[in-house]
Length: 494
Image (cartoon, rainbow, N blue to C red; front, top):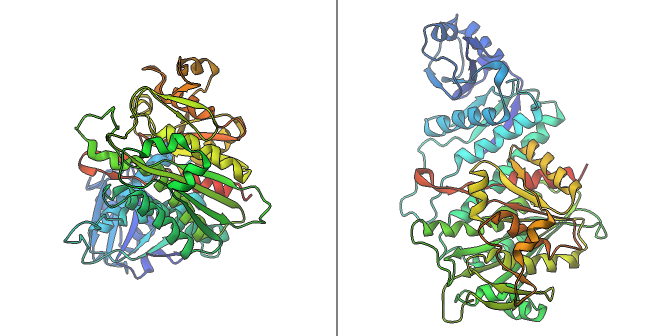
């Protein structure tokens, strides 16, 4: 898609559709007022007549309005002017862009960055408009024989603002990079498990390294993992015919001696639960168990697009978790790369078994920070639902930095406690640690498990089980938390 900023009056812009807002209480936004004047009161007349009340995400499309150069005007409801929030702004933007994407408009002028949203500057609003454009433009078609390609695709988007403002141009670049990264993560997540294997993820990392400057990909095979002593990771892969991969993708945008920030993404490309097999209902959604890995690769693509001055390392432990005569059994004891022994009480708690060895491996990079991202626990969905990701960690400053990035990116998180009290639940009679902590506080005890392998690291954990994909009629990967991870990394450049 082609994005640009224009300061031209909206009634004079040659485009297929101009998008303006209407507040509740019959108030037009500034750009809508200009269109109303040009059309001799048409817009205000329709509002007074009740054709659109201005409620959040309402829409009304007008054709061939006299006095306006654009072929169409899309009025979008913005709710109460004094009640606008960042989440409402995202809803308004997404609704408008989805409407445009389903219409015959191939170009559009968006006059939504002028909405007054507390806590959101123009830069942030422009960036989110670009991100939303990519999001609504995405269609999964890779495995379909007939592609759902619109006859009039939306390909050119202008955003009303000051084109001379450096912040506006930066917002376009960042929004474009994040949008591409989000859609890469969605595409990888939406692919079925028989296509998106550990080998496929490895090839994607190699492709990113090929496409962008300052990138290097290294793929560690089973024999390499055996030499490293990754017994915990390898134990999960034993039940699958797919070979495990440890994918390492490095971006060097700063001096080589600068400590990198490390992202570790869970890459279980299909999770049956292993011997502790899951119920059959909705098991197809376990192809999404690699969305942590997908988000890490999406963030690395954004780094490639933006070329910021910092160093980043992505580490993706990837395998399948399947039942087999050689698979992990409840009660088995495995030895991690750190030397700690683990009693596998439930083979469906496998994500932490691959992450712990990847976290130990991350120490070799002498990282400035380490964040792991994983669809780790159903308990996180029970606790927090589908809105924020769960956040835990061992460093208060890092936690606050992630919260700040979450706020800026509108990719929300909620912190849970990581108190020493919970470690008691992981005691084992037969090993150093059990891989589950019982029915209570499952998200917290999973993070407690990982914390045993991060004592030398400035570390945080994002449990994205509730936010990585949607179920039901809109089933599909969301691409979260690519925006959050990218913002966190960009903040490190300041």
